Image (cartoon, rainbow, N blue to C red; front, side, top):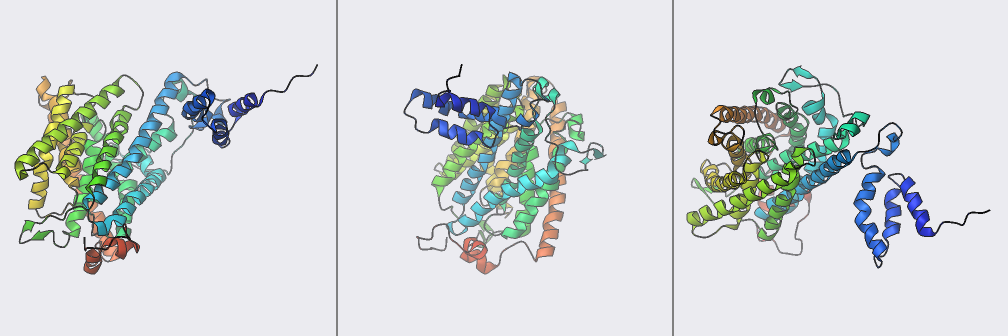
Length: 482
């Protein structure tokens, strides 16, 4: 007795279940070609889950050695993968905000820096940074880890049983954070830094400086973690670290030509507020991966963190809009953008541990602070083209201190005394000193080795797009010197 052949659709299903990760996507594409039937629509909606099951985490090769994948294991790892992608997509937001708020003649340079810096950050962090921050042994207990390159991607049975994160997805999420710290620097040094010298500094920052700073807190046994310092998703560890690194670079570079005349700051308007606004919204969306992803699991805290993040952004927008209107007579779009980002930075340290009303208030105060901080930095005659230090540095400090005020289990205003506020202040000061000193050394050495870090006056006047890249962002439009 012979067996009837299986229908084609059944044969595809069998092959898909047995497919490798490389074969799976093409089989899926063949299955969903044409969306006219309900079955095709069903296939389309199942693509992410099918890819996940086919081995996003390289589990197929170890199937015989691992227990059955549990729902908790799958949910935790899938959520962190999605969160990592959201954080990576924030690079697009940073690029658009920075390019839009700067002049047309430097747009290509800014876009190139923001795009390339993530490639550098991932490479440097994969090569050594992840080891220094998390995996290596303590060389100086609590202060410095060192030893070994790369990381071990092996998945163990215990990881599956306990619902832990696999090393690969953990690395991807942490690398996205390293890239964010480096990208913040770009905004502070925009429109006058040499591309190559910025590349070298970004490598040093993401390979060594940022991982050492992160090891003090996020691996659990660093000296600040032992002291009780709280920075849930990085108001200080990511945002202030990047801001201080960029501020040192901005001071070393000096202001752009024409920024300060007679001791007074002059406006050098951005060329495209539409893309700056879109960039702000991309960052807002990406922040759900940044903050909620930092829970490192898919549990009941994730939606709560998403709500506190949203409320803080809303509060920041309202605060900055009110103050900028009172300050200048009209609502300033650049300040609305920076107010939203200020609220997001401000809530990042404490998004998991404050009440919703406190989250909105923290964001509101951040939006107010950022307006005055921009004016203060200008008053010091430090040229920060996009207000990056005010958003990420000043509001990063505020957000970190706000934990000591509003945290429901340790805050001063929730009845728990001054202790946590003191620890938060210690962390802010420690990171500021460490980053300023190490980055001043790095910028100085780079400048000495490469004959300075600033482009020539002629290149700056013509624009870095031509001088550094030999192309223009808008070749069909006549240049107006902007």
